[in-house]
Amino acid sequence: MWVHKEFRLPAFRRGFHLVTRHVCEALPELKNVRVGLLHVFIRHTSASISINENADPDVPADLEQAVNAVAPESFPYTHTIEGPDDMPAHVKSVLIGSSISIPIHDGRLCLGTWQGIYLGEHRNHADGRSLVLTLQGE
Image (cartoon, rainbow, N blue to C red; front, side, top):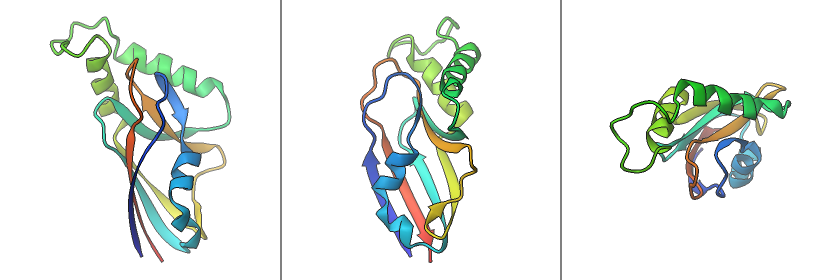
């Protein structure tokens, strides 16, 4: 079985946001997969998708602080036409990535006990983000 869906996340403020629930709700077919693989792709160059700890509420804030240190707005970027947060957002997106793949077993994502899917919203004012979900399994 193959399932391909595109859906839009709601707008989030700048930072890291757990979106595991959004992904699972957008893909009810997941519960029918005994064994498979879910590929999640974000269709933007100024946001990212990743897997990280989902238990401690300090994690998203620490992630945001760390990526801001790696790609600060104060760096002398050449590409500045879209505002001071744009080029740092592109750098963060390249470093974190635009896709993840997650194994599926018995209708559930095989995430670890403390893992969740994160949207990295790297712009100060962004609309909702589009995700492409591709599910393969039996």
